[in-house]
Amino acid sequence: EIADSFDPTAVILKRAGELVRAEVAVLQLYSTGLEDESYAEFVRDPVPGIDLNDLNQRELGIIKKVADERAAYWTGNAQEDSHYKGNKVINSELAVPLLVSGILVGVLDVESRRMNAFDEADAKLLELFAGQAVLVVQMAREKRRLEILNETSRLLATVVETEQEKDAYDIVLDRIDGFVRTEILIRRLDHDESNLECVASRNTAEASLMSSISTDEGFNGWVSRNRKPLICHDVGSLADDDIKPFAAPEIKSLVVWPIVSGERYFGNLILSHTTPFVFSSSDLSLIGGMALELWVTLNRLEIKKEMKAAQERSMALMRLSQLGVAATEISHRLSDRVGILGDSLGYIRSQLKKLGDDLST
Image 1 (spheres, rainbow, N blue to C red):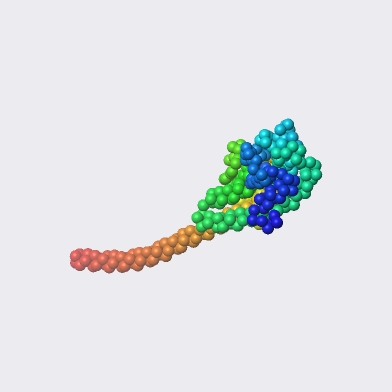
Image 2 (image 1 turned 90 degrees about the horizontal axis):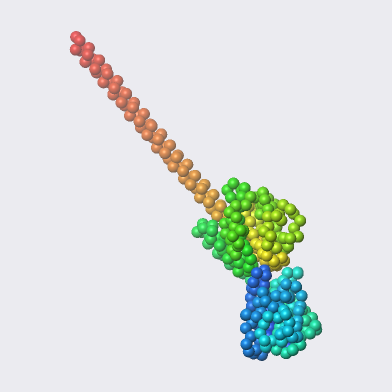
């Protein structure tokens, strides 16, 4: 039923509420943990005075506890529970994490006005349900990923026509930012192929915007030299001393994807976050796909530039050739004129000599 539904989150909430006899059900999904990707609610019975948008953010209360600990939690007396941050009409709350391969993708939360409304059996039941529901959510997310890649490909095609390279960076970053909310940078290899310059960014701290980074140093340099992705779900566990010192202390998750295909390398697409284990397999698929789409566009722009330069060189050579032909023609004409002038001068000299001879006699 969930898989066939136009709005799977609505079905998840409805069935979760019915499953454990809850009055309120909340599904909060995270793209990378930076903020909730989508938010929905199902209210079985109207509960006056509850503002779910205010009370059920990840930064607050039981949802935060479950998200941080990756484990179910419930309370039968919410008003006396130190973890509860909510409305006074709610007395029971149960929340379970939504996990895919150990990556947190959301929290399913149910609430009731009744005291002791939920127990361990309800928690187990809701966890089993959440395990099935999250797979459908991921399917919907994968569908969205493919839609974003198709949209990006279509938009990037227009960049090749306009030849505005910066537009390509903006298109890619805006689409990634709508799917994976985190810090994003694009670094472009310079003409000397010795440094990587920051050409575009989103949600990025000023310290991350160093104008130039050597291809010999740090994680950017490692990717530049090896031409393969660097994926760190926990930067703190990195053993490579050549890479780790170049990651800012607050960075816990890091993805550096080369914009490369074959022998042509343009730079790196970089995503980082202050929470470990935030990038899902779907996120990584999108990042890799975006890096390839960007490579295709930059490669087409480079080919177009090379063709233009070759055309300009050809035109210059043609103009030089035409000038050479014209110069040769002028030279021939001058030569002919000089010959005629020489003949005329010879005739004049002979006439002057004859005149001189006549005068002497």
